[in-house]
Image (cartoon, rainbow, N blue to C red; front, side):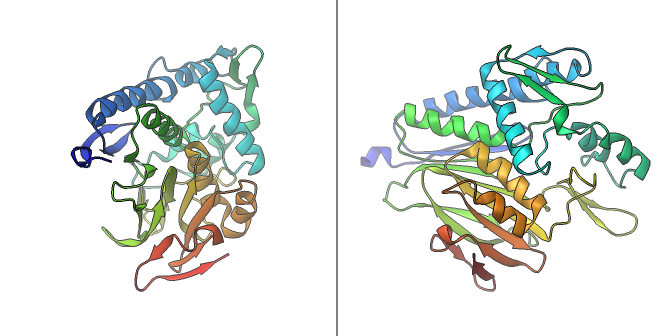
Length: 321
């Protein structure tokens, strides 16, 4: 990379209900960032259940009534989600919308009552999502059901960002979509990008960093959104579709590293819910995908494929499996 191309252009803005940051090297960096913002906006308008008229919103509005014709792009995301639902035996579930709304983590100070949770559980059966590839349509069987792509949407946006960086001739870049980090190539000095892994129990601290290039580093943790109920119990936002309550798998943070952003996003949530043992079984079905898991004792477990590229900080206990 030439000297006049070795200055990083950085921008930050809010989208997809999170803070997104760009750090891009290259002569076309500013124009590329503008295009990336446009693409992220397009994805959000198509896939967010909170955007009136989005394809997901239309499916939700027609729940219990009739199928809705969708784009090939949306159908492929729904097909991937359904496959992951089946592979995880329901741990990954994009029909969690009613239950997520019941817990309402943006405003909640107390857990919902048990009856309300049980009522919502009747609406989150992942088998009630019916896809018709021939008709290119999607349908929810029962009124009140709703799809929420929050567990894979940013991962898909990351995939599109990396594709566009390559198309634009950008050879060195890092993008952070609110915990979903994707990196293009190496840094201008020829070294790999260093992606920090947040300490799940200390503010503004890391457990270490992973060296990465041309891949996605996605983290799910119980520290993103949570509250303490009147009994003093910590209630985080990653809900278990089987129980209706916050997941208690023994893990408090999971980072997945993969060349596929949508898979990394979905797997980070899935492993968090499944726990270490069952999560490793799932991960074995995705060759080349690695993970960093932090348990309640703050012990770090990494997969052997990333053992050498994960640099832990002092005081952090680590083992590889």
